Image 1: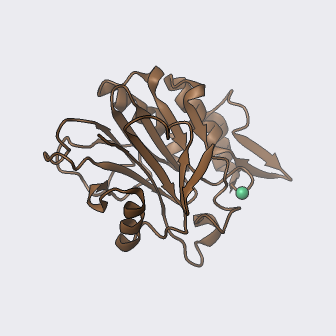
Image 2: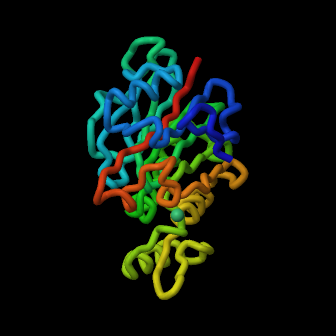
Length: 250
Ligand SMILES: [Zn+2]
């Protein structure tokens, strides 16, 4: 379950107890994470430095960036992985990177292999979900030494099947990509709705992540206007972005 541990900040009780791993999801009460002042207050509330956030513009692609492997690009990837080293990614101690994923309806996905001290964050919108960014991220974690049977995965707040009405073309694409997976597409009153969490958890399971290591938020960003930004619901007015973050603390 996702629990609100501070006003506007949520954690999964599946991984919140794992030593040295810190993760959180912000909601709209913490503000728009595209704004640096609001990112700073979120960081303060979590007891981390806003300078530690690995920030990047997401492009609905499938590239996974290994943090610490060189100067961080500011765009062009939708997932990042990091293996804890004695010195931080920037070569200094005490300044470990905090991986981020921003979303407002898309699935913010956080992953960790606690024993190998490997973390990941991924942005799984409809394009990323169809092209299985979740398993691509797991594969990158494995390249760094993760054991898939130890990986925990948390799917943060996102648009639910209650609200995620899609075109017939997109619904058929999901049916084709996830043939045999129950509940990915639902037809109600002649309209198609996609349950993205079913597609992402199936992808993770096919990659070898144990089902018992997965946590799925059931809060719909579109239904809960009090708590969440929703691109679908608010794009004609104003909307913001919410963060999922994960880091290793020593
Ligand atoms: Zn809904």
